[in-house]
Length: 425
Ligand code: NAD
Image (cartoon, rainbow, N blue to C red):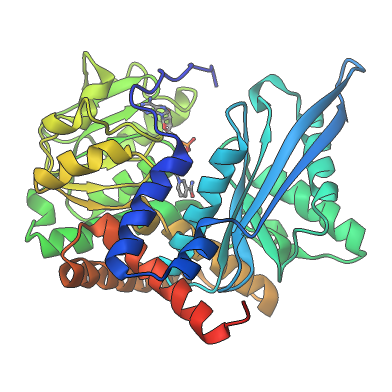
């Protein structure tokens, strides 16, 4: 696939500050005591490693790797591994805390973690990436473990890196330990339904919110930013339920069809076209690809990257409902503008939790030594997502707060109550 450099983000938040501003508000509404607040705002463990790797040309290059365990009071920590030049300790800390809240919102028995290596995987050979992944795994042997900390893919990593990680970990342990990672290939114990799980959760969240807002799916129009894993599965599943997808975008631009885009057709085009919508003939290319955020639709699904809804475009959003497929697509500064406009936002830590939910199912299946049929995976995922939505919705009414703060309240309350019972400070 040819690489297109993403445009710079105008209103880029420091991810840690952005997470903390919402956390603080929820903690205050909940009346969280100072002691628990201090425990939750600090990660349990931060590991920084230097990884010397022999590159293909014989040079030895040293990479910085991170793993942050934010919290394990609810169970082993869970979170992806990111390969990107922008990886920083602050970013990994924020994403690790996000995972704690995400797992708590959907009520699965995991804590939160995140990892990353500062590298540019697009500029590395397969062999270099494999050596880097194996070195990172060995350096984290005391951190990872099916009962301790369970990684998964994130930006820049895929099922291949998870397979290498599982292999390296298993060799060091002298036995096959497939439950040490999720997001593995199916043949290594991956779960059916994992690939589309995040999009599926976004679809369930969107339909639940539409029910509350009395929006009929067959009379609802939608714009989706991002046509990768999350965006394309969300588009397909929403279209199957009658929603008209009028706008789609990816890194190559935004496309509009007032009669609705045929998603199967767009998928076929993308798959034959280097994974991109560039040149898609059955919709009009919009002049400004960022216009997808403010176009005339009822439902907006940002499913690409962070901070795309910001103080510059939030005042012009027309949608009544935003369902966040991406992590952190709304900058904290834009929250008030959106709330004042009366737009309902189903926040990332709820809306995109279908992925970690099916990762949890993968881990359960590995530990049971069996494989669930797709129908069971989907049914259980839908039930968990629906119940989580209803819990957050009723909390938002009870505390008179937006859904985002309500999701944090649900999560923080669960973790804080667990601390109260377990004690031990
Ligand atoms: P992906 O790489 O499969 O797809 C990303 C899509 O966004 C691509 O279509 C890309 O072209 C598009 N894109 C990139 N920059 C863009 C821009 N400036 N404007 C419009 N489109 C742009 O990634 P994904 O797995 O679909 O993840 C998308 C988001 O969802 C990320 O924020 C990720 O952290 C989050 N997320 C993913 C999962 C998962 O299971 N994959 C789970 C939870 C959250």
